[in-house]
Length: 132
Image (cartoon, rainbow, N blue to C red; front, top):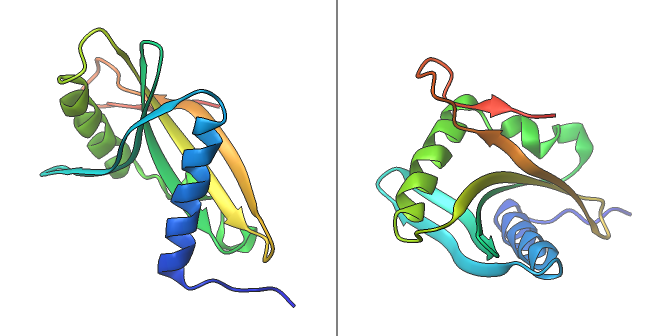
């Protein structure tokens, strides 16, 4: 029988799992759930000169859709604004926007990492581009 987790607990586990996914790859956690007037960044990480703004989406199963699909244009725009504000306090870094899409199988998490998932463009009509 498949174990279903309460939504809030599922989200916390998903963020914890994403944090360790990055830590095991040599990233340093700069901030978790960093908030400002524009919203919240799930994870801010650093490795070398790269500052990563990571959005974590966790689902009970794949039937709910991929978490990456839940990161809308509005959310991307907000993350870009948040990232630029956060980077202002971290000179000499390059920003990268990642999406971590987790899903719970009932016994374990499966993690999909979308590195450099989107980035700001100069064109104000299209402030982001989804890669891949």
